[in-house]
Image 1 (cartoon, rainbow, N blue to C red):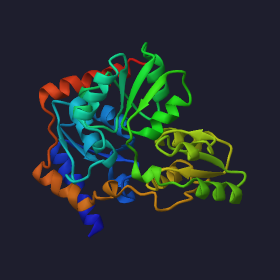
Image 2: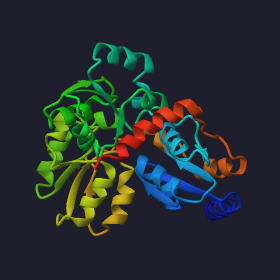
Image 3: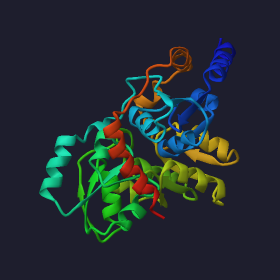
Length: 301
């Protein structure tokens, strides 16, 4: 059944002139099927550069929104419509507007893990890879950072700017405990420790690298170390093993799992291609405002 299902999906891709994108946190079989596997913003940029008519985004809702914003002439499908991001949902337009009124001299930096509506309210977007460069590029001394308090603190600890934190968090990364990482470091004293900036400040302070998923893969490929303690969603293990098959990757807390990322199945991908739904639509006026924050990020060197 598995081989037949994959064959059906490949046939439908050809018929619909579609490409399949998969985030690193997706199930392994989805990553193996995808045309491109990567982080959310990188995938959207990749898709925009292709001549595909249909983008099947195996991820969560905000990722598909970004793809729709960057590729307004393409159909963007999200195979599992209930796959959302709890952290993205923690910041509201009304709440952000109130904070902006309280701090009119502040620039608003939004993490890419936000809705199109929040991006439209922001001055500039950022990713986990470029957040320090983005904040450093702004003339304002005061920064409102949404929605991740941990990434905001990561920035505050590494800049002289005043960072106003929104109290959001990723339940998966925030759940990684410092004592668990400490035990892994004791057990593997020669290992390099790399954790995601969505982890708590306590965990980040124990790491050799605080870096996003793409950065972790790059370190795994080029570092001399043979063992790594990894603090991120366990779905990255699949890509890490492919990138550096001769190295060992220790995930000290195996319950660091994003349930929404695991909702996508091959059956749902096939159904999405058959019906060209569920389609992600971003209203034109909202998309235009959100695109400004994304495009401004792309000018940061």
